[in-house]
Length: 274
Length: 242
View 1 (cartoon, one colour):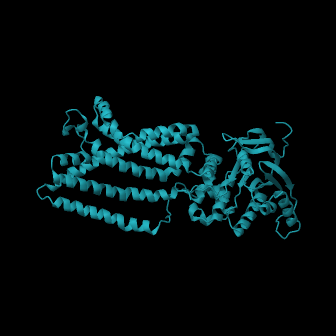
View 2 (tube, chains in turn green, blue):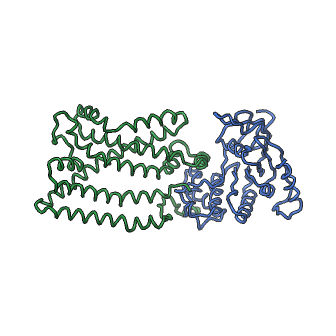
View 3 (cartoon, each protein chain N blue to C red):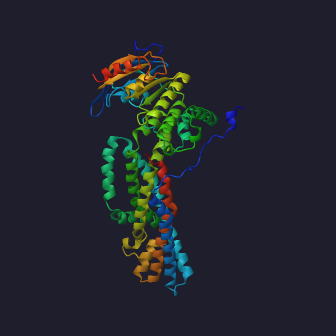
């Protein structure tokens, strides 16, 4: 056997280098974010203990469960938003003519408030018997455009010599997309996703409280989640539940930000062109 | 295409014109030249004279608007700023084209290791482009281009962003590679001295057309002090500024 065959080639190597980040960024990730998370957790505990009358374990369990219901609703909407956003952005970037027609169209669709469509969407989904799909669809619409516009911006700034190199070294169609376009877009996909999630969290309060859109509706037609819990507890003056729910949501988002977005933002650095 | 092809010519341009649509900018007009197999040709000229357009047509990135060309299928290119993928290590960048051409991963590894050694990169193969100096990046770019075993190696102002010492070293490396591999090289440069130090033939361009061709018979390595070198440079310079 020739000697070179004995050597294990270095395929699928994981990224192991660290990238230069500013002192400010370092301080932020080392101190500020964990500190915020700790403060939020302390606040949460305080909030629970403020209301001795509430059976804490039950409240805690159902509020956390509501948070995860909402979280997974957002996650499903997000996955669909990414799956649809990538081809839309690629299409808009595919030729000057496509860009000329699609960008203004996207602009118009994006600037129409999502909530204006909500009663219509609900009417359609009720026909098929699913409130859950109505909520996910509205969250999907709200998340989609942040990702689409961010990706289009990213595709525009891929250096022309990088595109030329990909073509010259034989990358075509899928491999061109997988090995060049997609990695080049990672930083923009991450920032677009961050904005999309922020938009999604904003909308859950409306998306889960469906009864306000149904003629003669009552809270029993709402979806179980942290958004509907917030609205309904406020409406029925259950202040303790309201505070526990809001603190849980803030802590949950804080932890998600620290363990997912901060890491992803840092990871995306290595995909940036100089 | 008639008349143009002799067995030894690997690249032929006959009455080639290039107009960039839709603006209608004329980049090339009536370009005629031939490159022989194994020849080292340098295209020089001021910015915007169309020299990069010639490389784009040879590489297939652009199509000529008029005229005839013979261009080889198997080419590769070294770019001005390296054009390395920042998310890949030096090794993975070098393997990029080789992996497309060659399915056997052991063979790809063998090829990559060969050029990593040739370009003096063994201790840098696991580094990412941003951890490398400009010269090291350009070495990776050259290794990546060689790893696909091209018939013609195109160099697009590869040393213009590097300091004098590194440029000198890389000139020597390119000459060594050329002599070892007998590849045809077409290089675009804006430096008269660089062209005179490296090439067999210099094509001087001005506003989209060829002003003059110079055949160089000086022995290599050519130093600034070598007899005839300065005269050659002066001769080209006179034409350049005409």
